[in-house]
Image (tube, rainbow, N blue to C red):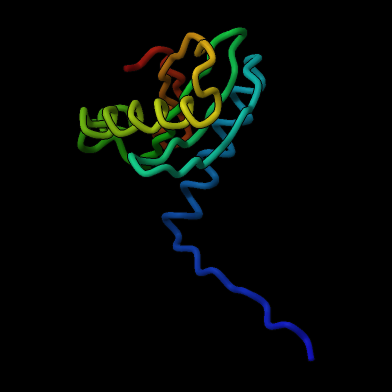
Length: 124
């Protein structure tokens, strides 16, 4: 008897988010960053992309908005979201490196408004 396939329903919003993250990853790789991990889910929150830029570990939040209404993609990253990403980054580094010296870190944003992609280095 064949094993039943597993179907995971993906909403249009989830599909759009995955495409935005793939677009951001492609762009950042073209700029010389190296991928380390993606869609890391930890107790404090989720990290969309983790990349290396030289000796820096870069934690990247990807936001997409179809309309600039309400301030656009970059403006949608609240102080609370920034705090969750920072806390998740600390947990990830602790699990990955433990007591070893941590590399310099940076928090970037890739904001996609319609077709316009903007990379904000050191956004928070």
